[in-house]
Length: 88
Image (cartoon, rainbow, N blue to C red):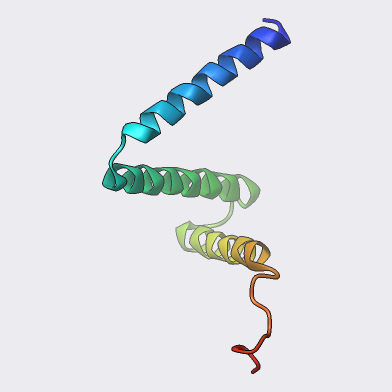
């Protein structure tokens, strides 16, 4: 398959995803978001198990929490700055 064909197919898939998303109710969107998040957590857990085969379920969950906290910290970096309302 040529690059141009692949790009055309990718564009068509994207347009279809947008079309479906526009027909969803807010509740359906929320549910889809939760499902995507839970699926990504499953993938992260599988990756942790591959990196740490000796880890039991409790250790996997602890590593997962640490990674999520690190991701949140990176994402929020620079969002909160001291100003007139945050002088402390």
